[in-house]
Length: 529
Image (cartoon, rainbow, N blue to C red):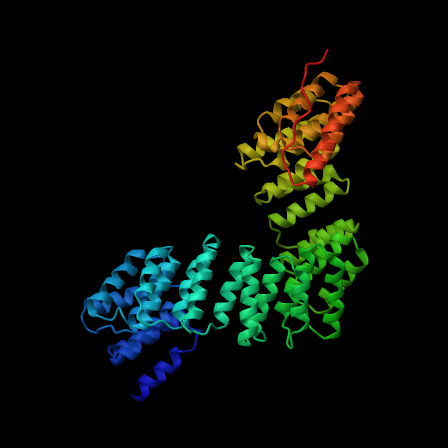
């Protein structure tokens, strides 16, 4: 190999190539004639395929193929197929498949693996499986690629596990990539038993101490809600990077065990592990759930002391923590000092003000948000409607609800409907609330009817209350809470026989619930005298 060619190949193997530098290298190889050697051509194509503009790979390939100045080989086609996959260019991928069959390299292992990846990546699972099934020999990459194709759809988890068993039966030793794929899919599809089988295989093959595998196991058990298993794996790790610390802390927060999440902060500090932005957000969430202002301030000091980047996520988490822990002034100072605010920051602040009793300021902040060009989302309108409900601002609430639908084209959720029903009910507009509930889909009316029935009791609207109670009974989503509410309403109305029927039905409901029978007969709906 000549010296210029060797130097070129070495330089192109480094992954930090920008398109501009590659263009310069391509120009040099054309001028010097090096481009007409397959090694140089293939290396340049591969380098282009790894940039953010893989289309250049296909352009260069097509140019030289049409000029008949160079002939591709079994190292060229996998690059073209992979570039087609990244571009989701199915016609080009299929055209290349036809060409490899025509030139007789369709049985090459690397070409076949690239084809499986292409078809799987573009959603053509049947074609990927056909290529896989016709292979004479398969390596671990072949198995990983086809398993990964099935892993993209959690509904095909069983087929994926059958493939894994076939891999083991063929004597192909799975590697850490196989384990990560399988554990990730098991976590996403709630496949606890399959995950335990994979864990057993990992231990048997001696892969339990590989960092990527440990991380995947940790994430799997956290997804399954088995935080104690995740903690055992975490404690047994010889080396722990910040990703693992973040995973276990997030796991405790997710399982609503914030005290243990905050305890891990002490262990991190003892082991001189530097927290990052992800760690801080999880820890602040734990402080918020405990309303622990002292701990929240301590974490804020860690951010300042360690010069941790205060990005939007960290600042929004700080605002949320201060609001939920009673530090309203601190929250607003952070908010007003922020140079850039996204919709989540605005929504968190609006919600915090509303829940702190500053409903009018929350609505003013919403107006300011609109003026600055930030588009509100569903959660923003939940917060603003909450402010209107708490302050009894019926006109503002109705105006915002209408604006949400007509201006921002946001489909109302049950939270939006419930907030407006509560607002109307609180203002004594019970019949308007009833009309409004009629536009809610039947399966989501339960909370709204419960709210309205409680309001009927407060305003002694017996006739409307009887109508709502009857609708509640026929929704079918009965619970002890609903039975108690109905019983209290009938007692308020003086209908003691209905009180007796409701309590009897509640007892039968609980008995059937204990025995696993979900069906329950409704109380008799005989006409009132």
